[in-house]
Amino acid sequence: MDKDIFKKVDEYIGDLLGQEDEVLKNTIQSLDQAGMPQISVSANQGKFLQVLMALGNVKTVLELGTLGGYSTIWLARALPEDGKIITLEIDEHHAEVARRNIAKAGFSDKVKVRVGKALDLLPQMEADGEGPFDMIFVDADKPPYAEYFKHALALSRPGTLIICDNVIREGKVLDAESTDERVQGVQRFNQLLANTLQVTATILQTVGAKDYDGMAIAVVNRAN
Image (cartoon, helix red, strand yellow):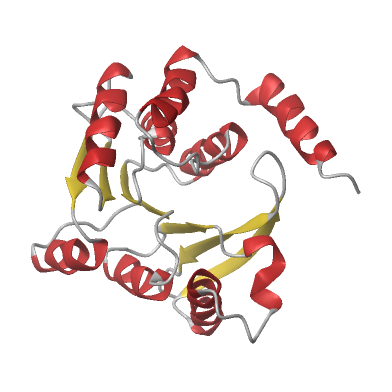
């Protein structure tokens, strides 16, 4: 099947249900202006995250991987008045761009951008007793996805929704001999997800403007 149909259908769905306003469009444009990669979620994926937030009555979100704040804005728009987001970004330049975009969207009071390696920040959050979070969205560097997931569990409660993006890698996860660290990272994560009895989880294959990939969705189990 021609891949172009995936993009056209994505645009069709977006025009109906996931429209980008000027704030979101300008956020995407700001990445080019700042020399940043165009690797944000698609508009439809942003809307999908909002639907999941509504289903889970989400008030607190932890995001790993801010980039320019595009996904953060989608998440913030689904928060209730007393909701909050903590988003972690390793690159100070990216974080500054994100802060500007988040401010323009009107969410500086609800969103806190923290700069540093997530594998340094997350243990400190645990030690400080932060959380538990209602939802954790992981869309960061792929090699340590398994470690991110372990920390996500530590910052969760029964019912917490954990979402990890880009876990199929255009089907490259099927290659057991892959030397790509990103593929190896999500392979380790996917196997850990399958072996973690603490969650009920699945992986959805995704196609569209972002080509072919997949998104893991896990819910921390409630006590029997």
